[in-house]
Amino acid sequence: MIADGQALRGVARDLPAARLASIGQGFSLMPMAGALFESLADGSAVIALGFPQLPGGFGKALADWSAGGPVA
Image 1 (tube, helix red, strand yellow):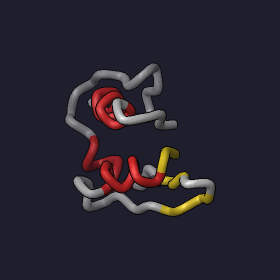
Image 2 (image 1 turned 90 degrees about the horizontal axis):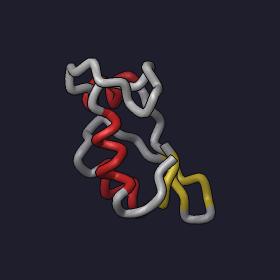
Image 3 (image 1 turned 60 degrees about the vertical axis):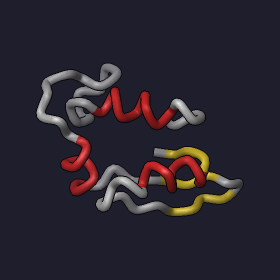
Image 4 (image 1 turned 90 degrees about the vertical axis):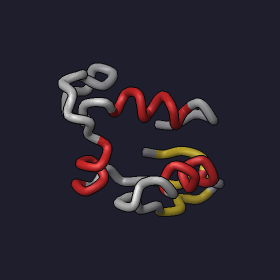
């Protein structure tokens, strides 16, 4: 995920598996590594935004995170 660094720091604070990397211009990258993927999965079969490779329930997490600004 790529977003404003401050916004991603707020997200990462609640996710022990999250790791951030500054990519300049005030943005940060949060790779979807295995441990983070597992921590975000809620066990549902709901397909996130038409991307079946993302964990079930990720659509809600992404919507919550993007409430404060754009998240890609």
